[in-house]
Length: 210
Image (cartoon, rainbow, N blue to C red; front, side):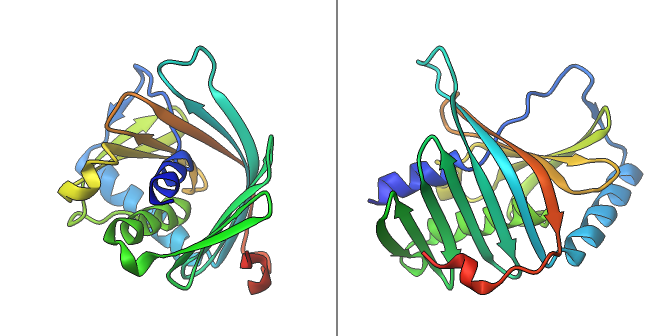
């Protein structure tokens, strides 16, 4: 069960292919970028968005494509609802991970695993854009055409065994996350594209039931 959940958590993070146009930010640009993102993330009380996920495995000729909807409510209620090609949801709520696999329900207490707790924090942070923790990560910042990119390398040795690097891509104008990149210990990756974001609409707690 734990192995399956670890794999699933890795699947819900995504990749953005960085082009040759990537340029390092200056110190002043970094400060301005972080300030803009932090201001926006503090204002996000709820967020819902459609997503399309592409899982790339080196031994497959074609990426595995799934799609669905993600819903977030501060401080840490989060649900990923996969709708195509199967029905599968994973909900982070009250220190637990709730799984609904085609009607088969299960739960895992995150308190039993520091890795689960850290991954939950990463996922919530990647959704809200609130991940600029120099104690947890070595962070580097880059400019792209119409976007900004932040790369996070975990400092924790245990977490680094599972997550080699995370990259968050932000819309430059809105200062919100549009893509998230996970590099695993292997060369495999997952790409989730966020679409049709709705910020601060009313979301009832009942949405986060399993």
